[in-house]
Structure formats: structure tokens, C-alpha cells
Image (cartoon, rainbow, N blue to C red; front, top):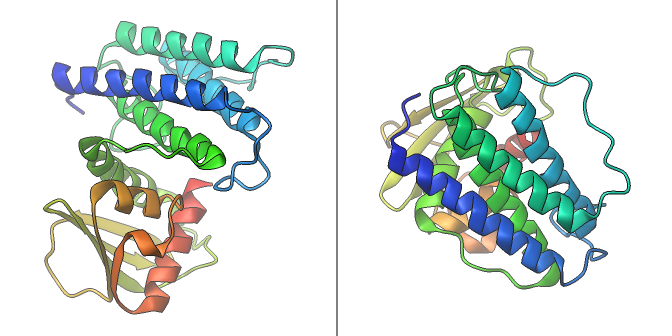
Length: 248
């Protein structure tokens, strides 16, 4: 999908600044437990981010998913690995530009532009994970959060993963998410999640609030207290579970 140069620069700037913040927080202690990623320490979290970066370097280099994967990284220093892999993925994105054909998990965009956005958003969510581990949460950029809500709903929840009814939460309902003058309406069934922009039509439940709060709530990085909820509470819960199914 077309990506203006200024938007590409926006994503790279956030990828860089949020990965720097991730490293800064990680230095407070790699052994701290990450409450938003049960079973993980900050060390696990940072190594995960580094491995994701390296995966995208290979995707951008070859145009397809690397196999075999992952590489052997045992013995590599965690923070050095993060810095090196971040620099590598920024270089790979810059070299690829924004219109190189490549594999992505989203059928609607099979170009390198997809990975500019995805890597910026991958980084900010895991930056927050590290901050939660050390109780030093910093703000999330409003524009990035709105963009992240759209990506999570359209490209992730709205993907073709549900066609076989492979869900433990086969809710049949409509949900609306609203923030900062933007709305998305999600119609859920056991075999589909149809996402449309706007606020047309009746819904069973609504979620609204400030962009960063809504974004972190959707990702399971904040509890119900940070957003406003209306409508059927059971639909909200099932919707939240459905999001968790497609993001873990």
C-alpha cells in the first residue's frame, strides 16, 4: 500500500526512539518479571524483540519467510543483540524502501511498507511491557496509538484466521471502538471479523477513550479502568478474548 515518505520517516523515528527506551528500561534489570507477558522476564522480552527484528531483516532480504528459523543466538549479550538487530532492521527497511514486494501476514498489503508500520508498533507495545515490569510507564504517542488501533483491528483481528471457526470465543455481535474522532465497527461471528471504518449501524457494545489508553487496553496491556465501556459487558469480554487469540 502507498506510504508517503514522511510517514515512513515517522515509523522509523518511533522504531528508533522506542527501542532506545526499551534498552534504557531493560538496564534497570533483565531478571524482572513482565506482568503483561506471563512467564517472561525482561531478558526474554528483549531477546524476543531482537529476534523479531532479525526475522524481518530476512523477510525484506528474500521476500519470503525464512526457513529454518530462528537462528542460534545463545551466548549473545541481550542488550548488544537488541542494538545490533534494531540497527539491522532500520537499515533493511531503508534499503527496501516502501514499495518492495515481500511476504507479510496481511493479504491486503504485501509490500515492505507493511513492515515499517508493524515494526514501529511491535516496538512500542514491547517497550510498554518492559516499563510495566519496572513500573516506569511513559506516554505513547497519540498518532502512533491511533494508527496502532487501526492495524490491530484491520490487519490482525480482521485477518482470514477465523474461517474454520477456530476460536474459543465464537461471539456473534457488533462492537464499536472510538477514539480521537475515529471509529471502527467490528462485526464478529465464529468464522469472521469484519472491520469497517466509521460509526454506522447499531452495535452491542462500545469502547472509547484516549488513544493510548484504548490501544493498550486492546492489546491487554491495561485494564478496563483506563477506557469507557458501554453496552453488553459479556460482549466486551468476548471481544477482548478474541483479540488475545489473534495476538498471542
